[in-house]
Length: 284
Image (cartoon, rainbow, N blue to C red; front, top):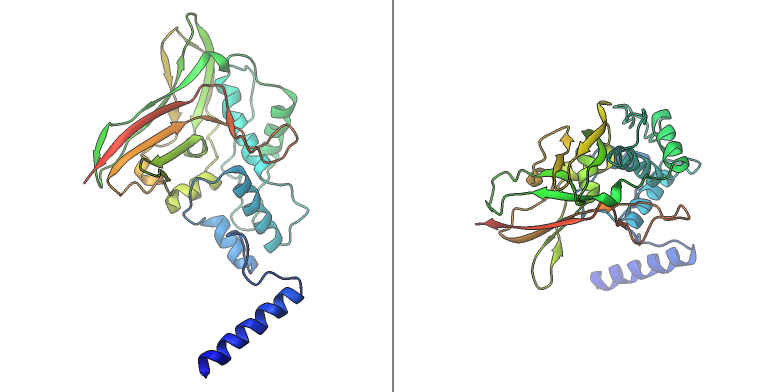
């Protein structure tokens, strides 16, 4: 009898919600009932799969709604401008003097946009990438086998794949750039995406600052590589849950967040620099 009444109550609640035009169960995981929960997500993002562009867009839309900041610019554009800051330097452009500030993300009130980021976005739009990037390919160095629980150091480099010198540039690269460029799966039947850790998710969204150390006019000779100068030793196990033994596949690619119309890009993989794919095995 009690169960019957409970089921009847739930049915009435669902019908009432539908009648009010409300979805009683949010259709997206990005739903924040209060501003406090939204701010908590901003400061401490939940562990997640590497988010695609549509998911990034949905998350920011949900945050904006919960914080009643619908007038704010969509912040996937900010990620695009951050990412473009680095790729423009790698392309060998000279005189690109906009740095990413440690204050680019205000944890206290949920503001995302800064004057520095806006200038970076404007430069990114006004100056198309030079043609140096097609001469480069990503190169990833990882141990082939790792014991479960051991750290997994990863080095990232740009390789000159031509038969002539290429002029590039670099900066003190944040882990966020690498996280935005990585697609990591556990090989199987079927293969499955690997979850970011909470630290990985936090770095993906909030870790885009640089100390402003930039180098231009770096010559990479034919067949040589230029290692990226990372702000921290990149240990894959810090940012992804690779605790389960087995074979993994990591692809490092050049990402785009927005398409030609300024919408979240469905095809988020750019051709240049060319992607690199490596496999490694976690032993028990």
